[in-house]
Amino acid sequence: MMTASSATSVPVFKLYGETQHWPTPDLLHCESIPERSRLHDWRIRPHRHADLVHILFISHGSVELELEGTSHQLQSASAIVVPAMAIHGFLFSPDVEGHIITLAKPLADHLHALMGESSTLKKADFYSLPQATQAERIATLVAQIDQEYRQPAPGRNSLLEALIQALVVELSRLNTAGHPAKRYGPRQSDKGRQHIEHYQALVEAHYREQPSIEALAEQVGVSSAHLNMLCRQIAGRSALQLLHERLLLEAKRQLTYTNMTIGQVSDSLGFSEPAYFTRFFKRNTALSPREFRLRQTVAVNEITK
Image (cartoon, rainbow, N blue to C red; front, side, top):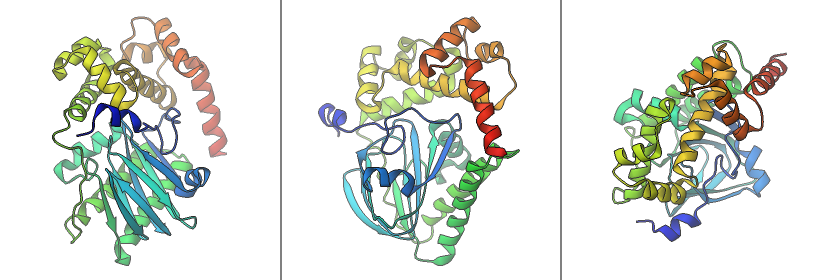
């Protein structure tokens, strides 16, 4: 079991190698592995994410993977799944090629619910892909996801979700095709992780109601002080910050992808007055909701020119 002292020594990143906020209102982020890893001299030190899931596809080169305290040398072609709260690190070869797809927890949970127990998204695992047909199918899906992510078009969100679901199906099938399952998931004895997972599930179900931390802690079965301690140790943020981050993500999505008025967005997220929502949004983004919407509209127009 991870002790409190060791828990605090493992950094919590928003994207691999970064402590900055989630950069997009999308529930998915896709980039080539060299884009970020070359900025860190090809090494991403061991860390974890409280609310993100990684899927990596290595099409060329190699990676030394550290996963929940064990090291593995992987050659192309290979795939890696890193669920939320799994400790992981990478040392990529400079000639590495491939992509990393990051799913925000709401999307990962949605896909897991659709897939049921066959889903790979809650099991830390890695797969060698010696058969060309397997690697080609996964490479094709990853390339389609990358293209759709970078060049928005009508129906983008629906197509991205369908492509991601197809990718998860392909990865899940590897477990039944002679690939031993490593599954370095959260240890059953780690009560702290279980409490955080329970809390995150409650946040996802009730964030629009803006429940009190005390009420959520009671449902988890711990005191609010203990819940806050666990959140800070494991997720790197307070319980209230995790709740506010989910509210903020949904606010960004609604401002970007719907025609709802700011008052309607405010009401849908449980704010009693639009002025309270505006203050909340500006405090967390340095932009008013109106300014954020305008910036997103300009950005989309620039991409689609």
